[in-house]
Length: 270
Image (cartoon, rainbow, N blue to C red; front, side, top):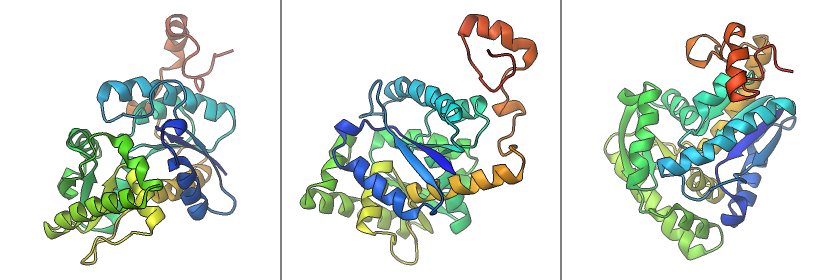
């Protein structure tokens, strides 16, 4: 199978993050799985904790899901904790589309009766909590704690500077321990780059029996599962009624007249 992994980072701006991400993915994927990592290339890719910047970057994500279908990918994975464009991509695509945050939240709810989130900064926290509410899992959330990463690009130093890595990991572990003390059974690092640093350092334990759920690993393995389920279900993994339903054939000609060649899975596009 072939998976498109959509990072929301610009490779040239993030130093050694993408090589580490590549190593993590190669270490967890099945032997028969090909995972191609794509970063942001058109606009941004450095500060998507801000809503407007996330919005600007999401356009590339939605264009890329169409490209992924055209190129025969079996699933499209959005490797960003905000899940930018997730619902829109599901409306466009006829292949499974999974998001980093939603996938981690649901898997954490299987692993324990409650989970916590360790976010990167105060700005990001409210945005991630919206995803928890959208997933209907607020009742399983035991609490949040945050690191002090207002400029998330500073995380890249953790891949090359041992002192910076020690400081970043210590921040995370202190925040994680705080949430465990307040009752969390599973801890989710709420940031893809932080997940990569933790996985690269081999840190999977928040103490007192509480595992750290690494979302990158989860996204790859759940992506493989979604592809297999989609095949078993005859291509019906994603519901196409209501929430993720594209326009019908009775509307699509008029819509394309004004929007261009949108919704490639709806018949009538030449």
